Amino acid sequence: MNIILLGPPGAGKGTQSAGLVQRHGMKQLSTGDMLRAAVKAQTPVGLEAKAVMDRGELVSDAIVSSLIDENLAAMPAEQGAIFDGYPRTAAQARDLDSILAKNGRKLDHVIELGVDEDALVKRITGRFSCANCGALYHDTASPPQVEGVCDACGGVEFKRRPDDNEETVRTRMQEYRAKTAPILPGYEERGLVSRIDGMGAIEEVSEAIDSILS
Ligand code: ADP
Ligand code: ADP
Ligand code: ZN
Image (cartoon, rainbow, N blue to C red; front, top):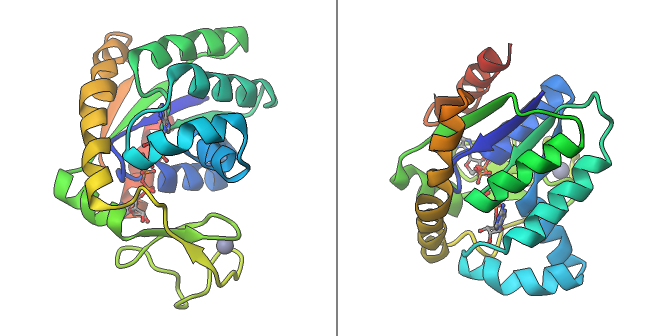
């Protein structure tokens, strides 16, 4: 199974990917996470991407497609892939088709998470994650069970993304509307798109995704 989770920043792609990894043993391929790892490691890609990400603009197609290419090639053939935050442009959608074909895979579902814009800003400005294991939290919607302690690993240090501020979020939403949303009709023509209401509770959204996959 190979699926794309599509939706604007804060729609819940990362949260739902983590659930799919746990429930179905799939692998999450998040270009955002890959780029943040490159920034942290100060690789040439990271050095080039950092300023672009801080502005909320899109990193070049060539960079993100080669990250996906490398990571997919390293996966066992039988493991399902979740594309989280990729593709984000028409060129990336074309790249993904050829990367999948090269690896003997095909796209099964494009799941679009629909969320209203005010909710997105609240979600993003309340987002934080465990500095040790990366588990995702929200100040009000899904805080750790014990304040200050990660549910998943017991870690006590948390971090917030530098691009999770209201101004950058607006730019990221514009990028989504201008460059990412236009790739949906092509997938619709191929009969691959399911639209899910992303405004429900995390578990409700997970159930809706599982019913598409089953
Ligand atoms: P994305 O990967 O699409 O940018 P995330 O999965 O990181 O989105 O979610 C953004 C923030 O919203 C996180 O803090 C997360 O805990 C929270 N969140 C995710 N799904 C929901 C939901 N269904 N209801 C409320 N908050 C949610
Ligand atoms: P979100 O969870 O808010 O949707 P991501 O973590 O997916 O955000 O992406 C963070 C930033 O990384 C984006 O604003 C963009 O600068 C860059 N980025 C991630 N994925 C891509 C991609 N597929 N194409 C171009 N830029 C990307
Ligand atoms: Zn943790």
